[in-house]
Amino acid sequence: MKKLENALSNFKPKDEHEPTEAELKKKRANYVVRAPDVEIIPRKLIKGGIDCTIVLDVKKEEALRRALGRRLDPQTGTVYHLEDNPPPVDNSPLVERLVPINDNECSEAALINRLVNFDKNRKQMEEWIKMFGDEENGINCL
Image (cartoon, rainbow, N blue to C red; front, side, top):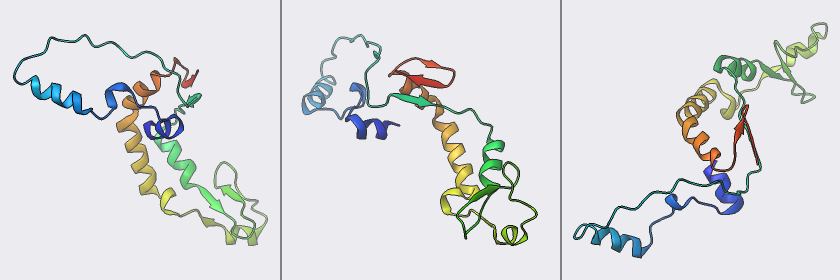
């Protein structure tokens, strides 16, 4: 999300900027003479390049079931799902030519890796999104 915001609006929070030469000098000087404590002011809501975020609350098992149950008809390009949108069973040639959608991005291992990364980074992502507005029912719009 941070990369997307940076690409859209070139925005970086002040506490995430690279330190300037003056700031580095102050830090080195602080080893000799301690500077007085500075009050940290909480972040204010800011107008960014993202207008709306939507967080879908889907169980991991359901996300995997949906992704792994998809089948492709290579002849027509139609995507079916074995449980949610099954192909017509009376069309034998169609059923025989269906192939699982197996690319590196949709493999079971890749999907599990994405879900684990999402869980690991969810709290940070929610905190970052809160800088741009209030969240309501998984939807954050400005």
